[in-house]
Image (cartoon, rainbow, N blue to C red; front, side, top):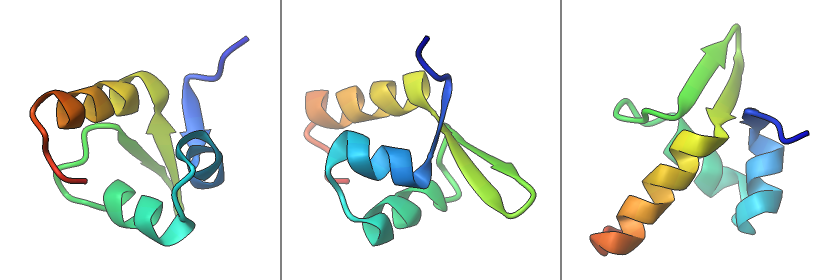
Length: 62
């Protein structure tokens, strides 16, 4: 069963990016894929994948 929400550590493993970069992206005000529960951040995997696809499609820097 695939998880709908991933932790920051799981996103790091998924993308191969460092934790600092992932936290920077996740904490952005315009982030549509971030869910904050208490002091923890979770990332909606489908929305995050859509975000990455749009960055690739429109050649937007991350």
